[in-house]
Amino acid sequence: MSQLVLRNVGKTFAKAKVVDGLNLTLRDGELVSLLGPSGCGKTTTLRMIAGFINPSEGTIELDGKVISAPQSSLPPEKRGMSMIFQSYAIWPNMTVGENVAFGLKLQKVSAAEMQRRVDQILDIVKLRHLRDRYPAELSGGQQQRVALARAIVVNPKVLLLDEPLSNLDANLREEMRFEIRRLHDEFAMTMVYVTHDQSEAMVTSDRIAVMNQGRIEQIDAPFELYGRPRTRFVAGFIGRTNFLTGARREDAVDFGGFRLPARALAADGRLPQQVQVSIRPQGIQLLRDKPAERDNRCCIEASIARRAYLGESWDYHISLAPALEPLRVSARPAEVFEVGQRIYAEIDTSQITLVSD
Image 1 (cartoon, rainbow, N blue to C red):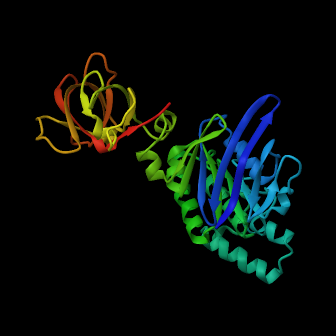
Image 2 (image 1 turned 90 degrees about the vertical axis):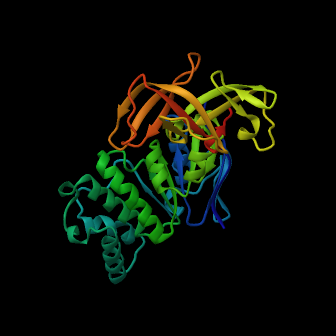
């Protein structure tokens, strides 16, 4: 069942089109992230879903009913949604328990039921022992858990999260990514998550919608989005990659320093005259000796241009030909090569993706 549907939604401020013909459908219980750089329209889209601003065009539907349109929109408090902001927005003069109970009081839940639900959610977010503390006595991660508990305890139809981890340090951000995913799985709640952090989106999401200039360039599961990006923007925004441009030469593609069979890039061999591909650093293996020929593998002589040791891996730049930009290769810590050393680069052609502009 489709719970939240955006149909041709657009938003214009003055003469600037911030969101342009956006279409998005969320299934019941799905977590979808809106991912993109600053100014791409993701937060404006979230604010339209919340009801803080009206769309300039298109409609937003919840459970089959239109809740946002240019002419009129349902007020935020009547949408049955909860929203978590970057700043947490928890009341400094209320204890943890009082903050979490606040929404239930507005719903006029009985005292006994309120106590039960507050205790239950505080156990789930591991804060029951801090029930009587005030926000100033909590760490950033604990304050974020209070905000999550307060948003979830009222059983919203949709939970909206606007870059909720941006104020946390790196270690806490990593911890809270998994916490948000755990809470989503426990409550099976429909969530829309706005972030510019690709790692955050990859960990938390069922699907990621990559936005650029007010439009969704691609929406897919994290694995598909990383492994099969459709455009140059998506390939470059999700992780690191190498871009190469080649020219079609009969049944092969010439990249200037090496050739690949056309069928290695398209099963039917049909390709345009100019071909642009993305190759992830993990799709290339460096070897000292020339390997035996294998299907779906292309072996090229190269040299190490520069390197950086990152602890968990080596980040190599390899030169294939004077006319080509060096390619980045990710290798295991034990795979040590010296700058200037001649090596063989074996490319897994199944990991080469055709991309468009």
